[in-house]
Image (cartoon, rainbow over all chains, first blue to last red):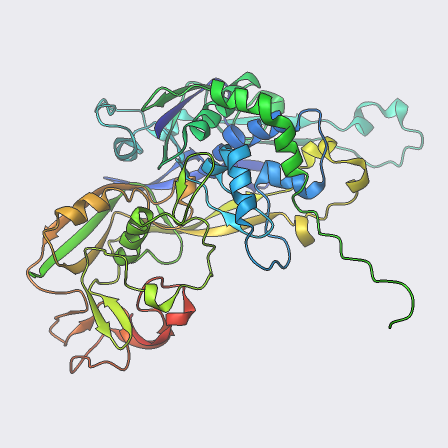
Length: 288
Length: 241
C-alpha cells in the first residue's frame, strides 16, 4: 500500500521539541538545501502513528470497557516485553493478527516477543522551499510541482499565553493571606501558522486488505474526533484538515464490520495478556 | 561466471537514524529473506517469512550464506564473507540527536479495572516513561563497492524494494530517493589502492592472508558476515577505521 497524507493546518500547530525557559520550541528536522543545512518544522512519524492510527482504534475497542494497566498500555502504546519467558507463543501472535489486523501495520510488543509492524509512516514534512527535494523524493511520480514554495520561516509565528494565579486574583477567598506575591506566569512559544500544509508519505509492503481498511478506519475516527496533531489541543491548537490519497481504493467498512462482529473476542484476547499464570498450590500435609 | 565490479550509490531524502549505516549485503539478505519459503501460513491470509524470529534468536550455522544475494561471497574458514565494502558516507552535513518518547496513557486511566487501580511510577519500574535519543545523520549519499556474479539488472530490481535504511524507518527516517548502480573499474570490495598502501574496505577475519602494507584498519572482535548482530559468528577481525 502506498498512501500520501496531506494535513492542511486550520489552527496553530505546536508539536514541541523542548523548552527554552518558558518558551516551547517546535520540533524541527535537518534538510540539505543548495545553500546549506536548514532545520524545518516537522510532525514526527512516531507521533503521527500514535495519534492518527493506534489511538483511534484503541478508543473504539476500549469504549465502555475496562482492563488492567498493562493491557491498557499494550492497547494504547504497543506494550512492552515482560519478565522471563521460555519461548514465543506463535499461536498467540497469530490470534492477535487475526483479531487485531491494525497490529500487522503498527506492530506491538507482546509479553514474550516484539512483533514488527509493516507500516513505514513518513515524517510530516512542512511543504516549503527547503523541503522541495524531500517532497520530490517521497511523493508519487507526477505529483511534484516545480513551482517555488515559500521558505519555512514564512509559516512560523509565535504565541504567548498568561496563566493567572487565583491567589492574587481572588484574594477575598484566601482564608489566611501569607503576604506572598502570587504572580502569574507568561508562557508561549513557536507555532506553525494556519494555512500551512504538512505532507507525509506512507508505505506498507504486503499489508493485508483488512489491515489497510483498519488504517482508513482509524483516520476516519481521528477526523471525527476533531483531527488534531501536536500539543495544546485544549487551547484550539493543532486542528488540521486531512486529505488521504491511496494507490488503490480502500474503505473502512470491512474493519468496521470486523470490530462490530468480533469485539467480544478481541476484548477476551486482550484480557489474557500480561496475566501471570497461577502457580500450582503446594499440597498440604506431610511429605510422603 | 563473470565477475562484475560495481559501485552502488544510495541517494537519501531524509536523515538516517542509528549509529551505523547498514551493509549492502545485509539489506539484500533482508529482501531475499522475504522471498524465501514461508514458515507458516496465517489464518487471515497474509504471509510472514521473517517477523516471528525475534532479534537475538540463534541462527543455524548452516544457514549463513544460503540466501542467494547477487553479491559474491568468498569462504574464509567457515565464514562466507561477502565481497562488498562497508558503507561509505558522503559529507555528513548534520549529526544530531532526535528523541522518541513513550509514556503510560494516564489520560485513559478510566479504562483501568478497579482492582488494578493504584500508583504508576513513570520514573521507574514496568511503567517507566522514556525519552530516548536517536542519532541522526544528514547525509546526501552512501556508497558501497561490490562484486556481483550476474548482470546488475537483478541487483537493481531488488534494490528498488529497499525504500528506507537505518533505524526507526517506521517513523520516516532514512528515506531513499534513488539507487544508482554503475560499473567500477576495479575491485574495491575488500581493499582499495592508495599511494600509502592498500586500504581495508570492510571487516575481514584477522587470521586470513591480507595484502602487505595494509592501512586504515584496527583489530577488533565482531561480525564479518551477516547477520552482523549474531554473536555466534563473531571472530577476531580487522575493521576499517
